[in-house]
Image (cartoon, rainbow, N blue to C red; front, top):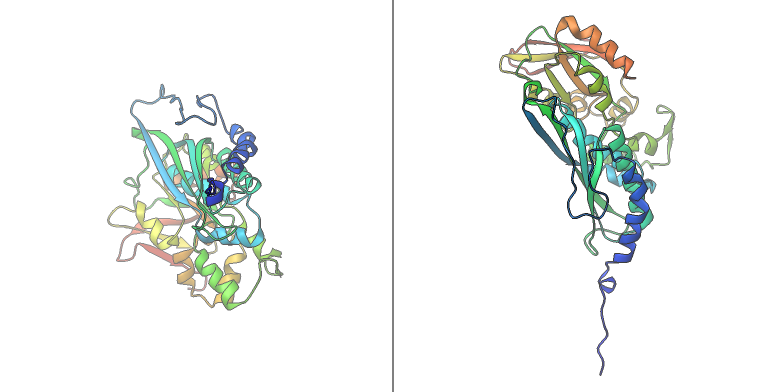
Amino acid sequence: MSEEKLTYKDAGVDTHEGQRAVSLMKEHVKGTFNDSVLTGLGSFGSLVALDVKDMSEPVLVSGTDGVGTKLKIAFLMDKHDTVGIDCVAMCVNDVLCQGAKPLFFLDYIATGNVKAEKIADIVKGIAEGCKQGRSALVGGETAEMPDFYSEGEYDMAGFSVGIVDKSRIITGAKVAVGQKVVGIPSSGIHSNGYSLVRKVFFDKMNMSVNDYVEELGETLGEALLRPTRIYADACEAVLPNFDVKGIVHITGGGFYENIPRILPEGTAVSINVGTWDVPPIFPYMKKCGNIDREEMFSTYNMGVGMMMVVDAEDADAVVEALKGAGENASVIGEIVPDEGQNVIINYPED
């Protein structure tokens, strides 16, 4: 009696589909390469040459992150070519906060079954994010894990590396009372707090991603899936010309958890609400979920994706430099003495 011969495909892993996915993503990946990239797709390790001739003590800066449950919005909309931008943004923006110049990026995608076109769409977004983040996409991994992920679902994460001269590292140690806080706009929710997003809109309000919302001027899905802003161009417009004391990427934990990460002992930040434009998704979500304003500021960026702390005499010039880079930046607060509260939010009606 002859036994049935099993293959890897019988176990749920289609290596040929994986190879087809690599073929489809090649042009997107190559579009991020620069002269420093020494290897193409297919090598076991990625080689990147470092140009450090203008640095006395070069320091590598790295960051890793994922997209979180925002991916569920992509699943619902069956739109997968933007979440890669989110993945890059979450990593590159953190690296920028140390004053680093982004160099390269690697990605990891895990799914139950590889669908070549879908994977290529995801990588297309990652490549676009790398272009915005001034990074070469030098490597990645697509893991096919049958029975581990539900049909049509996947997860992704990324890893970013940048470089900075040791004397130019930004840590927040030079933040001092009297300095100003410059806010750079976000595109909306970015990539944090989507568990609460889904609870408000899908569980409480019983809405669909296809619902058109008058207050938003678009469908709910379009507002929720909008990619995270990447601030590489903004930093490039400011860091070579100004002594920036601290940079904050407003991610999970909102204002209350992220700003204190750069505040020296004895200092606090006073933020003036009304000095920047708040995207309509935030007041709409606050209304739908009956969410306290403090909860909103402790969970979301509220329209400010990145903050820079600069000397008071530099603040207006930094704003102008950012506007020259296409950012509608504004002075949104200042550093004050710490009187028991790291972050002070001043509302117009207070």
